[in-house]
Image 1 (cartoon, rainbow, N blue to C red):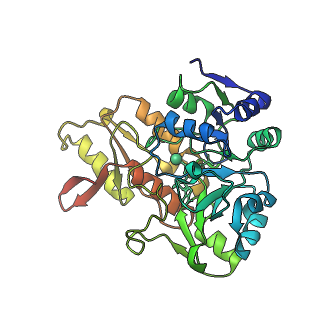
Image 2 (cartoon, protein in one colour; image 1 turned 60 degrees about the vertical axis):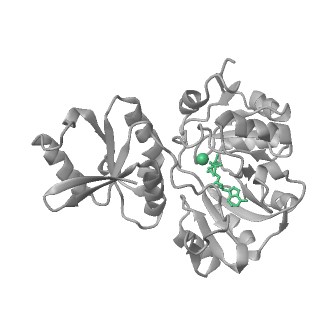
Image 3 (tube, rainbow, N blue to C red; image 1 turned 180 degrees about the vertical axis):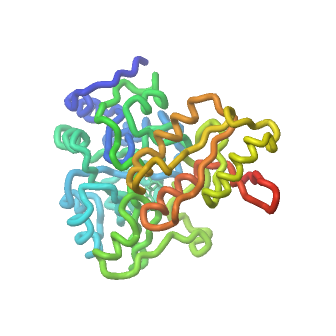
Length: 333
Ligand code: TXA
Ligand code: MG
């Protein structure tokens, strides 16, 4: 199959109405879209990216009125939040109506809904008049794509078209919020932070805590490994661990590694967390494409948007580097 990068929203929308999958730009990352109400089309999403069938998809819609079409109950806070953040990088987990096929939600009784802000995605929603199910347009477990070219690298020969909408401005996936048990829980950190949500709803927003929800499938997509480059990525807790590692390479103290054989994600070139977030996956992909033996990064401050950045880095990494006394230690996960 020939895969083409296109600029036509009409062709992209036709693909959706025909029951095909298509690469679509969103403000967060590129998505692999299909008609959410067409089971065969949704099945193609899972097949194309080899996604396990227990991992549910996000349904993208045009406006808050559409929530009522697909969700059977909408808590009051859900009406407040879109005023501030939608269209935008925020996803709401709500009790689903039976209209949404089980394949979309991997059999759960909830559905994830989001209103994307990318102009071209909005246009495709308008033209196709369909809710669009779309996971990130990467092969399962790999780095999320933030340009049409990235999608081509991931899915060449597997889909017909990729709509080019430029580089995604947010760069990491949407914040996912659950409203189960009368409280708001962040299932996936993203661009909209816990603090942003708390300000609007005026109450505590909880972090998803694996231990607390042990045994229950809260968000099946919260796998420990994700966003993975081919080259092993080691993550330092602090930048000084990374600096120490580089010094030791200079002194040829670390066997098998030289300065030229490693790639370093250098966030100091960016002025803000927003810039780090925008470039996180594209930098990782770029380093992965060079023939390095290992990649290194250090966590950022675990505050606000920093939480989402650290979450992606942790999942992309194979382990940590630590400064232990006189030695630098590599530890696999
Ligand atoms: O920014 C985004 O959200 C991007 C763009 C394309 O919109 N999409 C995206 O989709 O990141 P995906 O499939 O890569 O991630 C969806 C996440 C997964 O962690 C999944 O488990 C969770 O949302 N999710 C979907 N439906 C859910 C549900 N009913 N309950 C709990 N978690 C759900
Ligand atoms: Mg994904």
